[in-house]
Image (cartoon, rainbow over all chains, first blue to last red; front, top):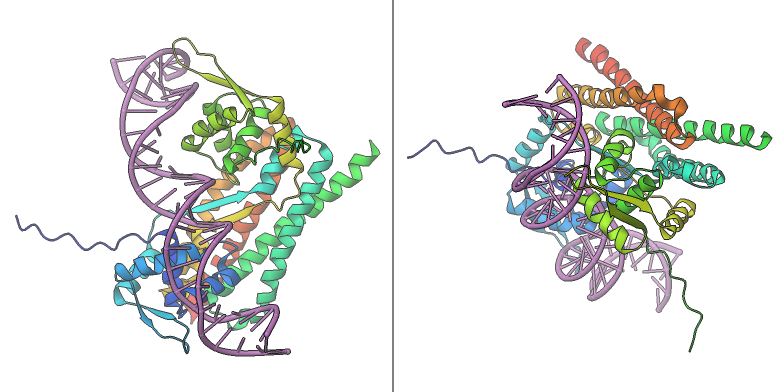
Length: 188
Length: 188
DNA sequence: CAGGTCATGTAAAGCGTTACATGATTTT
DNA sequence: AAAATCATGTAACGCTTTACATGACCTG
């Protein structure tokens, strides 16, 4: 007996735990602020809802990765979080991990396009237009952040630049497809 | 009384219900075949697992949107499905719907990049390399389908072309970023 | 004082993956 | 004869969204 005690082995961060820990490490202090920042900056590649954030903050505290203390604004309750040293370790471990990073896309527009041979071909064009408009709205949101890119730490500026690049490509593809569909079709 | 009977109102298709219905409409007949085709063609923008497919096929049958009949291969049980006319209607309704199509991305590589200012900057490069490699594997899979694009119905060929375009842009961005990180960094 | 924002949380329901379990047929 | 493929399914678990509920503070 008396086997060498197995290392406390950083419990794997849950998906939402990852954003939260990173945000808290970046100095974002409340659940509310995390949600705001996620919606402004990461939601195009990583979303989170209040229903996840608040319970997860508690779980992270139970695991000793963050520490919260009440810091009300007048009579309004407010919990302010910061990383513990175990939290820093867990964050570093995640950032340094070799694990194949997860990657998922779910695009209903593309699925409709895929099945558009089963239906009225006019719907195809409408669908592509809808996809483009959606991407254009997304692009506008990203472009609104661009002026601040200079003051951003490099990592944040880079995700912004990648987001813009991908969104632009998407829009260009849609425009080309729309052109092809509107110029060749009607002449037949 | 005797209000005009409310239309039977096509029950909304669940997310997985959408792929399945589309696949069955395209002539894919068994749960197993649906999974194969999804993995080969749509998984880059819409995945599905057996654990969803088989129960969902039953639910769709309960709703009268597909009809299944046993068609064993020798002693091996096998269920073959086809669309009912209600199923065709539901598929058309979905394809024609104005509803903002859902769109979600969850990219752990980008999230790591976003938080890469909190850690050793060398990790940033490693992370981008990992992202690029992942996209390159994806691109290889898509390119493998390209030769068949001519015989594909237009909708399928278009999703392939869009997938390739986006994946290429992603890879190009990574290559540029890698170049910037490796040429400017070491000289400081 | 009304409307917006700040702020926290829970409950239920839905969605999805993973792992397990089984077995026949086909290919090498 | 082994390995791969065809084929179906369930159970447990985990993740996420949505909707609800509440209330204080700030701005016009």
